Image 1 (cartoon, rainbow, N blue to C red):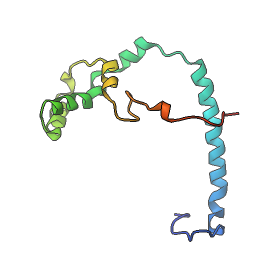
Image 2: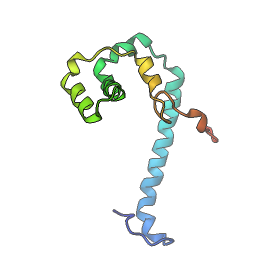
Image 3: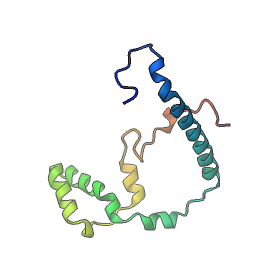
Length: 120
């Protein structure tokens, strides 16, 4: 609410938000540095990841499969919701490959992004 309805170009109104913003940016920068170290050291265990991917995790994929077969989404969603305990097993790798929208797991679009300034 502090920054609501401010007149463009009048800086005194933003003096209350400057300190928290600067602190938040510092915390974010330090957090990213920690994440960078973690990502260098982490070794995911594929078998553990696959075990954690239970069928209900891919419920939306099942609903989309019904939609592709011609079922209205509302009906497909309801059918999946009513039968969560009976969902068929889905190969997680194949399910991820099916998501092709930009930014989706099967198309992260990382080639669209560059890091110009390394963290230091």
